[in-house]
Image 1 (spheres, rainbow, N blue to C red):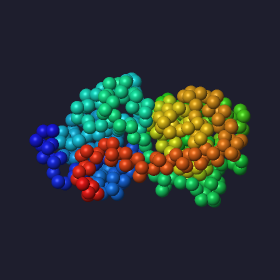
Image 2 (cartoon, rainbow, N blue to C red; image 1 turned 90 degrees about the vertical axis):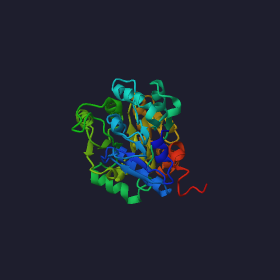
Image 3 (tube, rainbow, N blue to C red; image 1 turned 60 degrees about the horizontal axis):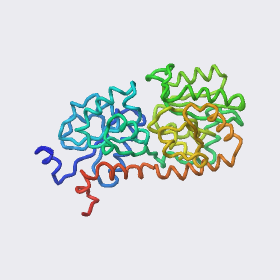
Length: 359
């Protein structure tokens, strides 16, 4: 620690913890917002911001990695820097440039945070020292995402035009390239797998209905049109507008090849929706097959279709998975997750100054 850092971090006043996201009303923004809010409730100084470039002598946690990786020279050296790597193999061509920059920045970084064990393994394989990496899962706001009141399911199904007796499957994520129509698939999200599963399932399950939200869903919509599977797609302007859409569902289908979450896993559990997923991301860490969801290997088209068909005809299985999901998600409430942020990341720098610390 040089003399300036010693002066700034040795002051009686604790540094503020700034969580940086790109500001769009999407997942990264709310990770930043919730971590800041929860830390503030514990009497720590924290804030969610977009522009950190004028900060000096503070703790800056880049929830959006590209804000740091594309602007590393703009971060003053007196700050303590943390960065979250949501998903992606730093050695893969799609992420290679970001991985190279991350390695160059290692001397300036306190910790690199990833939500999954697979993310941790990718970082280690890419040459990031294990001691630099902390695994902290994504959380969910269980005050917003929760079981519906009895009439809510019928109301939202009627609003969305879900036919009587339909088996309704949801997918609420961006899975096309860019922020336009999304006619080119973002294959890491598995939209091709999603369509192949539904094609298989439709041959045994003629009463399918699909509910889509999120941006860039053109590839999936064109595929559903080709297959003749009815669906509705609503682009929702605000993140939490999605809450009642979960109440329309009989199942939530995740077909990704890699993920930092997805948030749909935790939001489905909190909303009482059974989950069928590929084994990657947070499902690989948190989903127990047959207990709180159904899971199989990536690109296992037949198995995913089989599990959805089984789920559609087995109320006892549906109830077991719902109850298991509700139990698991209590561990993933943001209040629980942010405690890990404090203990695993910030405590060495703010613990001795915290107003709630009596030592």
